[in-house]
Length: 217
Image (cartoon, rainbow, N blue to C red; front, side, top):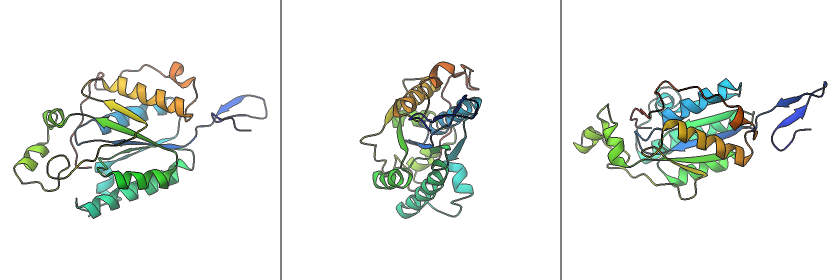
């Protein structure tokens, strides 16, 4: 019998860890740190042999959503495609991580309903800090009018009203943000309580510093 935390006993009486599928939905401005956090969460889960997949906004747009622009309609279509894939993975026991700006509350609410096991994480960061991290110069291009419909400049970002978690990447390291995400997943029952104490403290490649690359999501 499966326990509330996804453990069952095999024929030899040994407990086997069965991860409950869920989607970690990272949302925030371009340059806030979504992808950096997503890939470190992925790394930590893989170290524990947990089935995990990342749907990064930029990668999705080069494959699943190739050809879509940045109008409201196209953004919504992109997010709904991501949500559909997340729902398939989640119901098959995979922890799925979406790292896309997903600026509109209505579409995020649609994703939550579509997926079910949905953990919204607001990757909060002041736009001025995001601008400072903008090595690609996307914010500058948007300010100059050379890049249209850029979230946070000439297209709105609607902050989550009731996210499961808020991480503030201008105030905490990527390691701290990831640790708080795992703690919340344990609280919600998606990970075993022992995950936190057993998780390996392996330094990420950024040395704990948040080094996000701005994207259009």
